[in-house]
Amino acid sequence: MSDLKIAVILGSTRPGRNGKAVADWVVDRSGARAGAEYELVDLADYPLPHLDEAIPPAMGQYQGEHTQAWAAKIAEFDGYIFVTPEYNHSTSGVLKNAIDYLYGEWNNKAAAFVSYGSLGGARAIEHLRGVASELQLAHVRQQLSFSLFADFENFSVFKPAEQHDAAATTLFDELESWARALKTVRV
Image 1 (cartoon, rainbow, N blue to C red):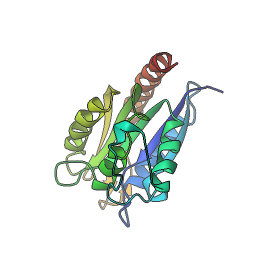
Image 2 (image 1 turned 90 degrees about the vertical axis):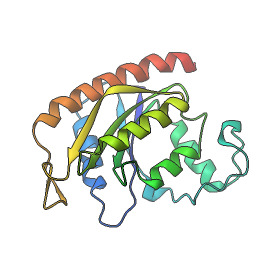
Image 3 (image 1 turned 135 degrees about the vertical axis):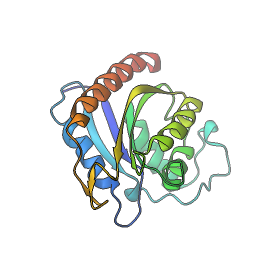
């Protein structure tokens, strides 16, 4: 068993969301890996109101119980895979809000991105890369982008094309490598 822990953060809480199937696919593909333990973290299980902390997250002085619970959960991990829809050329509001709640818990850890949308969600990932950089989250090059036209039947049943398997392996390899390296920085 590895001492490396990676969260697969499901960045949509929308009713009827496609993201659950995508996140489950990522977790399923990670199951055969020995280099890290992967865990699904569903934002639906962490109902965070629109950022309501008076003190900036960089101070680490979280007042709300919901913030403290979210911070404790995120602090458990060495790396993250953000599974994001693309809404209006960006990520979901609920994912951005959840990320903005914290600061130090993200620092010096690794991140990877999985997206879905009409153009594969690529624009959501581009926005998240800038956010990750500001939070000192080292993001890997490999990403997975699923098209609503090619990887979903009737825009709702997730049926990813075979080529995504090899890309997922590369994403896991890069993420685990970076997460392990950054763990030494945090010790």
